[in-house]
Image 1 (cartoon, rainbow, N blue to C red):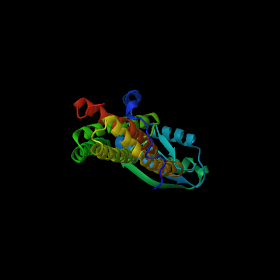
Image 2 (cartoon, rainbow, N blue to C red):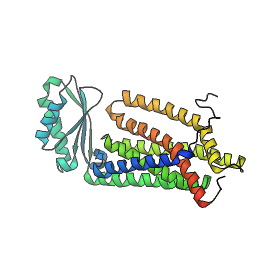
Image 3 (cartoon, helix red, strand yellow):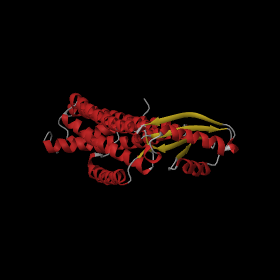
Image 4 (tube, rainbow, N blue to C red):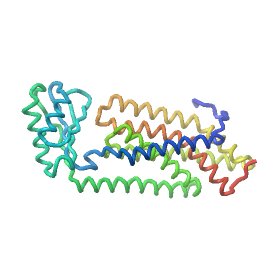
Length: 305
């Protein structure tokens, strides 16, 4: 079996736990500052409004399109290219565009057909409209989805391992979610249903990494009952280090390909996955395991020699 890092490696991860905690606390504060300071760039799914995907025969000036549609609709318009200068997604928020969603989509269609002849024939690929109440309901359901996922994880880990491991998992996953959300805001990624799906995927992926390490810690603790807790946990992390890095790297390569070649439609999903995988791998190795050690020491489960 190929090993990127030999299991005999003796890196003192737990001894550096104060460094991990300090760095993570600082990053979480920065992440929370972005989340509550700048706020999310909600997509039509959550904010309500109109999203129209169009394709021209030839390239069209995106700045001219934005200016023209803003004047015709009387509201700010967001436009994204979809892999080329002839394919676009046009978004108008509900709050900015007024209540008549049908009128907004008709205005967009008419403006594109009459004022952008240089682009040739225009094809309306899709029109997506979400009312303000639906957007609010989706926000609430999205929050509940994340909450239920975290509760389910707490119960699962508590049953499979012990409550202290479950507590460590929840704290580490909260850390992962805060940092990932902070990157979403900082990178101005549109928060829509695909980004929510990526966030939930990251939670599951990160948990899987942590369970692998926790499982090895449990086995190692049983095998080496007389060894100091710090040594047992360090050995466990080193033994799973190659697997953790190889799995994360292979997944990252696939997701990076999505980000590069998948176009704008899937880019938000890919960016969140890339950030989440990196953060989750770091927290599994540095945060979750260190939390297990510190909580057990506080509870007096073992005595450090």
